[in-house]
Image (tube, rainbow, N blue to C red; front, side):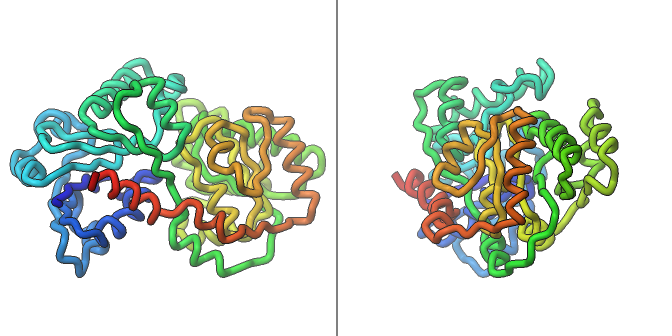
Length: 354
């Protein structure tokens, strides 16, 4: 079977991880693949394999050309195959073979305050278009599946294919550095990540004698927005209390996650939410909000929950956990293997073959 995969999102954050980690398992199957994207970026994955072809495409996903005037030469190659797969909800126009897509989450109609009215209408146009054109849809959690059904319908089969642990995390887990007095947050300034709640809880905890430093993984410049209230709150805490790491490598991220006393993930909304899983694999406790998707994903894991959006509860939980002298967590093998990209890719391939 010849399968075309849209790989233009390979350098995106969560979508790119999902795609990059599934691709080797796809290419190990008895199928032939057309990979659309940047050949230089895909060559490392496809190198030495004789069951794939790299098709260069610099057209931006969701652009007018992508949606309404995709190159005929590429369409000819796609339509000579058996199916087309997009790891996101963009689908080029003119595809006549069965289409499979992954919708990671459908946050914008659930949290319309994250975008403008025009932005929401545009996104809903692409969501509905994706739903209409897809033969089957994959998503990363039961929660996301329920929200897709609520906003788009329940007619199309929607299959849960969880996100998972990246191999480099497992490799770094072999190292066990001593814990230091830091709390780590991985995310951005957008409202659904809950950073504002964490900052208020951290301020209150500092007033109660907390000596730990808050480390925000990311660049301060990337946190700028039209609403600078979060940045002002960070500035009010002082440089000694809050550190922006800037852009860091995977190895450096693993070092921060391994050595910190606690990871806090105060999200108000997620499709899956990987950082708590990565932290625990690296031996670090995770304190996370009790949103439905976290209850689903981390139900069997040794995490701590706090009431979502409740700064006082978050402060109390942080102080209680951190008073235990930076204890570590050790995940049993069955929990480490619960979410793997091999399982995810296998489920997707099974649906392709059916």
